[in-house]
Length: 115
Image (tube, rainbow, N blue to C red):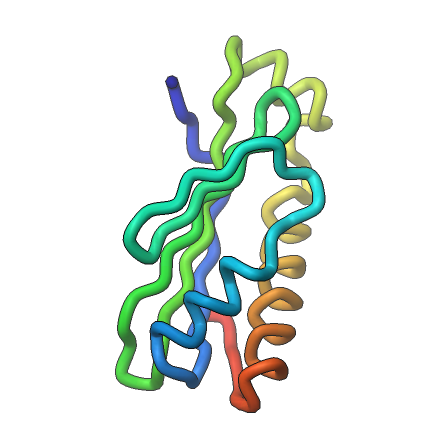
């Protein structure tokens, strides 16, 4: 599989890594058709081009959550055209990510912030 990075974002949730990991895995996106689970990493694939990879690692304040979006379809120009050249996509991804880690933090009774 060829992957091309489209955007990435990260944040910190002020809770233990294992709690954040469990909450993240339980917060599966609706458009997912395939899931790959690793050691504190999860990849969701959906549609004809999308692959989102998430990871949770330790951070002095709790847990660092990283999210990367890749195109896994080729040719890339077709993916870009179908997604309006990804104009605004990074900001929408950042906003959705912020909402997601805020939801996890609320569930765990702690706080979250983007990095």
